[in-house]
Amino acid sequence: MIDHKITAGLSIVYEKKEWRVKSFESSPAIDGLLEFLVSTPGIIGMILEASNKLLAPLIPEGYITIGKELYLNHEEPTLIDEVVSLEITVTKVYENFVYMDIVGTDPHGSICKGNCVRAIVMPNILLDHAYERAEKKPE
Image (tube, rainbow, N blue to C red):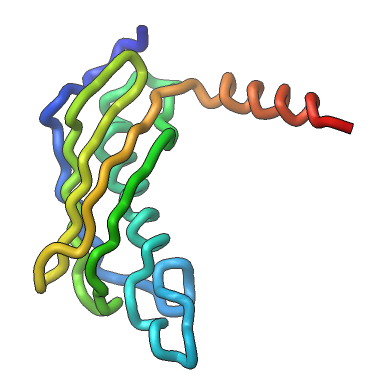
């Protein structure tokens, strides 16, 4: 069991005010029409930033959290010049898994909701496992 300080009920409100045009944060341009909308991958990146900001100070040195599952319903479009706010709340902690709910808003209301599971791991063990898997490639 990993000795951490994460408990159900912890939450963070995380805002992003500056989005980049023509990057993963904006939607792919279709005749230049959608590049000024916040993309789903942009919101996912924001979820990763917010989760790390919430969880990293609460886990032992030498550990990180990694994504295990993510469900996101991106319900409404947001222009890239608008502020997006995410509220991420820990709903459950089981062994080294952290379960969280996600609610996203912009100045006009709700834009997304979902949930995710992150695992607390040691990066060197994770890398060792990845290298072991790579060596077992079928010929």
